[in-house]
Length: 121
Image (cartoon, rainbow, N blue to C red; front, side):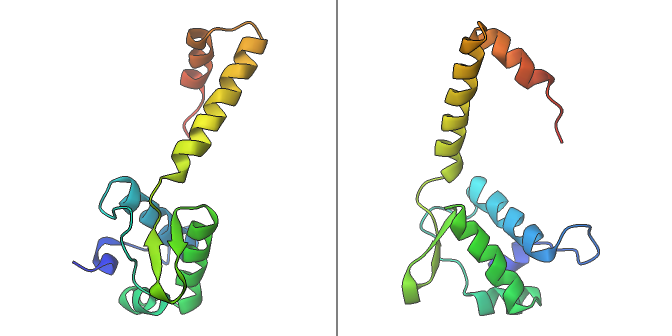
């Protein structure tokens, strides 16, 4: 199955197409359907499969690369990064959160209550 067949974009949705593509690629990576090291289609190939402008796909790829989710290896193409950048970013955020909680005299259990009561947007 080609990657374009797994992606569903809606031009009438309230979100730009590049952002829909970006988040769906992240979902494909996080669920393991796109494994680390997998070569992604070229910008032109994916744009053709999805009937999108080349710049739309290019922007999604650029944003994924900036976030460390994919990596471009020159003329060899764009690949899913070997490590999930969310792992390091979320671990650092968790450390900062716990340090702040401890500074306020809260233990991990009490700090978790605040996370549990935060709204899910």
